[in-house]
Image (tube, rainbow, N blue to C red):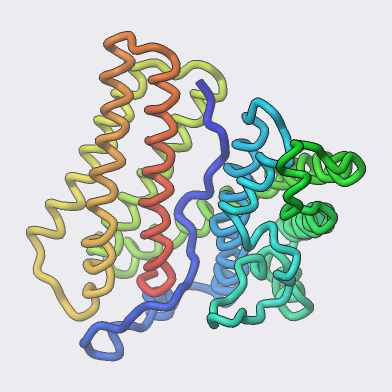
Length: 335
């Protein structure tokens, strides 16, 4: 049983948040109050957040959609049309590379994957070791979208007869596979750097502020990330067993419980308002995700059929996506 996609963990994507009624200085990101955090580390975090946004908003949906297309019994124009309807902004050729806004005022989702001159320069300066993988991914995404532009998704004759525009399809599939290869290269590069920055930040938190609410929440979410990474790696090596999964579940349960106990035992302060708000939104999803893991363990111990275990595993990874999606909404503001 293998995971279908690698997942970027603990991203640092900044999105718009509706302000709560609270003192303004409580909204200053924690990293600006950690005087020891270098300018270089901050620039790395900013550039990395863009790449993580690319993976979360574009690459993840694309991979899931393309895998659904590959799993389709007939890789036809009809199944491609279904894919296009699920992810219109990835398939509609009118969506450009610039971070401009559409008629509804929403930033186009592809922009984080297509760094323009200013963003590319920042990427070069802040993350030189990750730059090549990011630019290769951008080039592969452009190539895939060029092939998409040659497909007539809306041709009723094409759908009705289940015919395929051979030349366009012949170009689309290799382009899509190149994008998957570029994704496979980019994801571990980002994940490793993100883990490095967050681990450094955790040490700075403990050194300067002690094990406060920020430390406990970040440490817990790093634990969630490490748990899924261990599960994924074991699944890829085909060494995952119900007992090892149960041990991971129990270890993480204790870590999460420590965080809940600390937050319950210590009063909220102005400086911890944001992190507590974040935890209030993330923790229910954490509990739900732990429940999906327990379901997989129980079904496995009860010798459920393979398709049931695969469904359980998919449910667990989707629950994790939801958890991290909520985390990403808060992380830059809080940390």
